[in-house]
Length: 260
Ligand SMILES: O=C(O)[C@H](O)[C@@H](O)[C@H](O)[C@H](O)COP(=O)(O)O
Image (cartoon, rainbow, N blue to C red):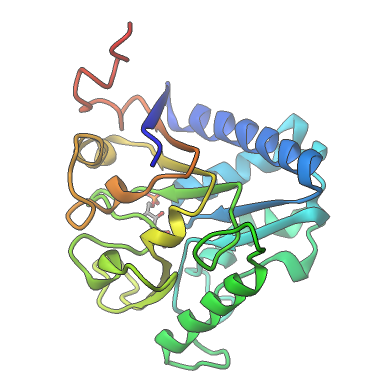
């Protein structure tokens, strides 16, 4: 488990631009070292803001888009192309404008696909796809993602792991179907905490006043069942990327940094 590091930006626009620049560097480094990179995208405004910023970042062409694997941390279980699907929003924000290899864009299944309304079967299929991509050096049936990004909800949810619901308690499976999510739509697919924790780096994105309490709770030693964001950490790095509003209620020991 890596101790969270915090980076606080003036506002959400700057946060998105700085995070996009950081992501480009991370992808380029991974591609230089291993030939490819593997990234997990998040739904939500902050994740999509980051993708849009990536699309207009000056260094965007440093990325070899054809050697990038994209996975999702969660998905809203809706028909293919639905505007509320995370993948549809990611395509609109960036993916349709860069030369990705379609075989390496691992969207989660849609509700009008082969599993129909059986979201648990759809989740199991995504777990198999992850397991098939995992190599001998990887842990827990998922590839070691270079960076896994997560938006943070006002209730401290990450991916589709909501406080107290069964999905956040899952310790065996890497992907689960979620029923009765408090944020619409109620039926979703989500990576579990064990799958999230297999990533090298986990980045949590939080911008806006409505995230201030969630960030303070998750970073103050709350339990992961009550505050799922508290259980999201990477093998080598856990990074909270915040804007000033989301950081406004952090305990003084965290922000400004204790060393200041
Ligand atoms: O499908 C979703 O809704 C998400 O993946 C969800 O976990 C999201 O990331 C957070 O709710 C934060 O969303 P915002 O960035 O829009 O606040």
